[in-house]
Amino acid sequence: MNSSRYAVDGERLWNTLAALAEIGATPAGGVARVALTDEDRAGRDRFVSWVQELGCSVHIDQMGNLFARREGTDPGRAPVVIGSHLDSQPTGGRYDGAYGVMVGLEVLRVLHDHGIGTAAPVEVVSWTNEEGARFPPAMIGSGVYAGAFGLDEGLEAPGVDGTTLGAELARIGYAGDEPCGAPDGAGRRPIGHYIEPHIEQGPILEAAGVTLGTVTGVQGIRWYDVSIEGQSAHAGSTPMEHRSDAMVAAARLVCEADEIAARRAPQGRATVGTLATGTGSRNTVAGSVELTIDLRHPDAAELEAMHDELLACADGPTFGRQPSAASSGVRQPSRSLPRPQISPIWYSPPIVFDPAVVNAVRDGAIAAGFEPMDITSGAGHDACYVSQVAPTGMLFIPCADGLSHNEAESILPEHATAGAQATLNAVLSLAG
Ligand code: HGY
Ligand code: MN
Ligand code: MN
Image (tube, rainbow, N blue to C red; front, top):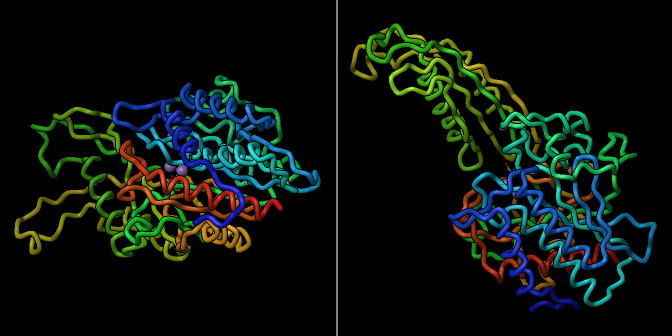
């Protein structure tokens, strides 16, 4: 039972999530609001119209990070900020990112409905390009805000579609003029405390039958771009031992990356999410292949070891050598495979969140009538970068089968309400 003085309106939150999910809705029930597309603009516009109904001021910084602000009674206090992201994966779910921003909106609505005066201002932020699917790396909007990337680096980030982040930001009308993230902090909007409500995107809470997760930290992430240059050749007339087959080399690397993670079960993770060949013909030996690798582990040293093993496998003398005849039982022609060129493009270290915010989230969940469970996030979030410049925490709710980055992503209304109530409670305690 919620013991706090104010209650969120779960039905209003659920209807708002449904209304937002209409923007970029896909036939399979998910959303496609890829960063800085027209659908992302429409989602941003919808959010702006909702917060303006509440009298909030709207602030857009040079990376397009979008802040809605409700003034506090003590103008000298830095705001308590609730946030996440409105952009989605190309075949995304309705709740990844959207849930956190809509919980922030619900908190603003409760404060507005009851005329609650908080000492600290309360803000809700939607960060630009959290997903990194169109403009790698991920979380670049909060990354520039936190000083992890320079502003020019962020604005010049090349899209997978040949655009640049800055050009698309201007095209959709969200190239703000507020300074974003001067490394010395001078040009950064202040954040007193940051809370990011989010779906877990994994199976742990649901399997434990727990409604709310107090997120204590985030695992480390490493991203790589890989290119493999072999030689295209005729599929019929080229003997196997005469080939330099980029696709076989790619297949070998994919299996090796999978092995590197499997050796560190259950925490090690490896994903090859994209693979493309330059030749693209069923009867031509692949001359070139481009692929990406995503490695994760909560322990920095283990993630470093995974990194070393990945680079070593491609450089090692045995890359591409066929299993010995003894093991396969068949005489293998002597063959060599083209060596992958592996380029590390991004590293997000393991994160430990601020104890004061973690405790406020935990206490907010308890005041909402739940027994929260501590959990480490498997997915990266904007909170990773924000935690480098402001006291930060996260709150998780379960999602069905732990499924996310999938159009079938789903949550229960009662879980959505529970997360919003816990967030409201935490915000009221932090904002005074
Ligand atoms: O990749 C991630 O972990 C995040 O969902 N962008
Ligand atoms: Mn997310
Ligand atoms: Mn995501």
